Image (spheres, rainbow, N blue to C red):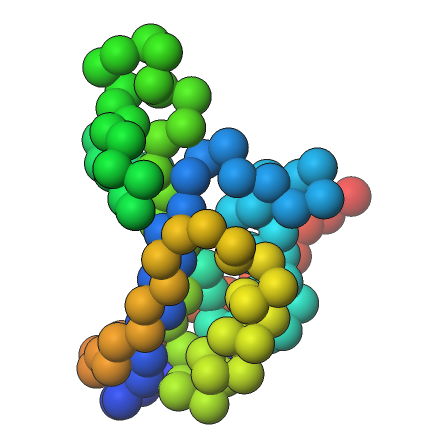
Length: 117
């Protein structure tokens, strides 16, 4: 897939312990994005943060380090991101979802590697 020029960045902010049908929510989102053929998805773990609950989660305190903030970032064409938003309505019941315009300068994948058995 080639991606160049104007696109959208979808960012989903959730907690590390958020679940969807007994599976980590971030895993479900990444796998659905992959199944939809989106350009890519990355999950980033925060070391400290708070959200709508105003409870600070930090890696410095053992009691609060179990639910660190996560950001899932997906960049693709606007129409593909917009189509994926409907799927997120089912998945993300708590958190923050943002969409921002971005300019893609370079998006290059690796060449497939032939693996010998």
